[in-house]
Length: 394
Ligand code: 3PG
Image (cartoon, rainbow, N blue to C red):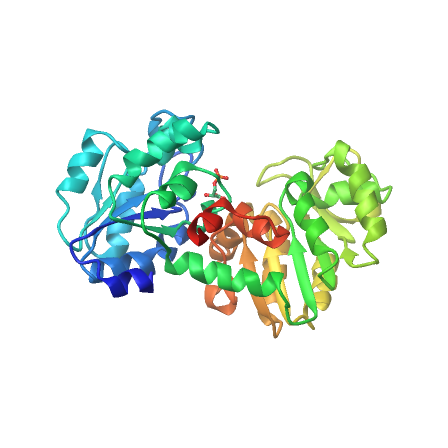
């Protein structure tokens, strides 16, 4: 971005790909966590100050290539305007009449937001020609392109991969910071390097576990995914989340882990997946057959905290339990607090764990870095080539 600013952007149209894929309340449609909007402000602020005509585009959710009002970016435009301190002009389509006139009418230093990119089949198409045709329409709105959508750099989508091939392109402040931080973790992290993984599905985390095992000193596993590992140890897990076809893989990982993987020793089990469900803490070898685990227990928090305490580098992805329900939030809170107490450089990766930090009222500044990328940060640490980064490097 500094290179682009040095060239001068006053009066030029700058197309910014942001990741404004924020969580929305299912009932009211209100934005429940605006972290991703705030994360892109440094880039947008610099462009506004330099007098650019700023055209922002993003996806929200996973609409199926056609307009779907529940995924409109309209509310995001309102919030972005509040945060920038100046109204954001909202185009009610992505590359149609509304977008064309909104961009054409932009004054220097003004910001416009286009409607959800994924209302257009070309955005996510696997067909290069279809994607390219959509990228041509988008690229027509910019004299230069800035990628500040770290959360989407792992997607080979038109706005991330094909537009930079059509315009002078640079990385925004957020993308640069994310890559600087994650490359430190992937390179030569200060030791001990401890990784905490949670969340619901083992299958989503398998590749990163494989990639991290040789590098990390300890790998602490909680959240819904721990039950498949506990099953792999021969324990019964009641009606807890279980990916049966992953049990053998987990057993194999445990055998190869040289004792680096640490699993819960106690869990909070409940009668149902509900905020007011009756619940108790039990040892992992005593999970009743009719109950399901919704959080890790206090002994686990103590054990994991002891493993985190000497760490010099920490990466945390995925909550330890159903933190949205107060009865099952203690595990996530306890681990988050242990991370902040360690004298370590800590990185929180993933939408859910970042949202947990904010929802639990924890001090964001006590973490070294809170990544805006869920899948993107995991794929970066897996060592995969990320299409959005590759496109900027070309
Ligand atoms: C995310 O939430 O991880 C990013 O916004 C990417 O969204 P996607 O998984 O729907 O591509």
